[in-house]
Length: 430
Image (cartoon, rainbow, N blue to C red; front, side, top):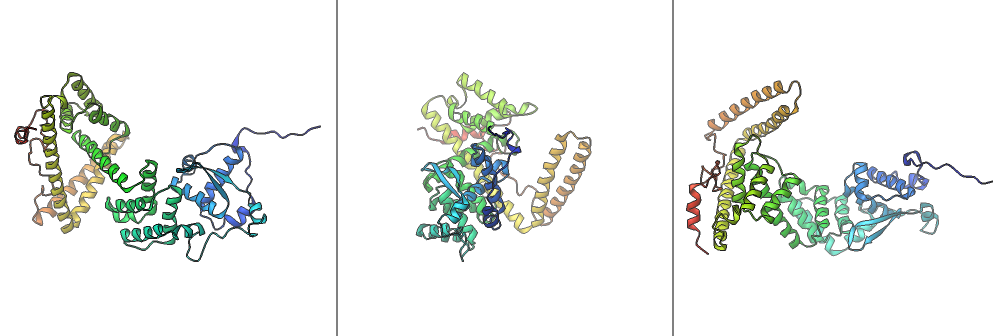
């Protein structure tokens, strides 16, 4: 006679064996998310199923960085062992769950490894920080953020070198980059925020500061182009992934310059809902007919160069006008904080009004009218505050050198602006 037990194919109806050593010795002092990652992955390990760290993070509602930190934490305790698929890629590895009873009673000093030290750092991280480059990194980061690092922050930063393979100079540059962005001072103090930047750079194989700078320059230039196109279409938002793919094709495959793309955008002003696809159809038609960037300056190489120089001049004019407007805005906000508060409230209510109008709810019209009244009150309050303190209502507006084309060279009706001929004549023939 033989015996067998029925096996269920429903994973969630099964059981996962968790050693009491883990429950009693490891779990009480471990961060909750690390325990979640351990137990969840242990279930899949016992089932013999493959589960990537990205999937663990998604299933548990955790950040991928926290999942990676969890495995470094458990490895430091000797609970798991990492097996790297590719020694050059520190983000991809297999996790082996070790037998805890064997670890404790099989000759490893008769007890679990002590995960903490007097300074609050794990033993492995203390070893990492014994490295002069990492010590210097922590000093650099403290200088950038203007505050001392906590033991937890030091542990997190040191783990990026181990988990992501990030060189210390790149990590320091990530903190500096974060500090220079919007809300930079606050962002740079959030290791979680900076860690996502470091991870993204490592996944893109940006291993040196020079690689990162080149990537940022190219990326910022293209993002500026995306924003300029959407602004021309009356859209105050970021481009979607599909829209960036379409716009990349205009600039890279079809070879159109910004001036020609903006001209196509202006041609869409006569339709009810200007959009990227409509502009795309115009540019595809121009490309087939040999128009646009390839013929705007006579199809000659010298003409193309002159055209590019003219567009560069327009770009400089727009950037100068925007910088000056930003300086005037900062001046007003510094002197009149209430105007800044009103502007922020106007932006928030404008978004709420758009959502109300698009919701289709039964009370959408009433909500939109209520918000319109509130916006009117705020604009009146803003006008009083500005004028009573000696500022014109348009003081913070962008003042383009040419009001007709707003420094693009193309009027709203799609025709070349008179200022274009003047700039084109100023550019010397190559």
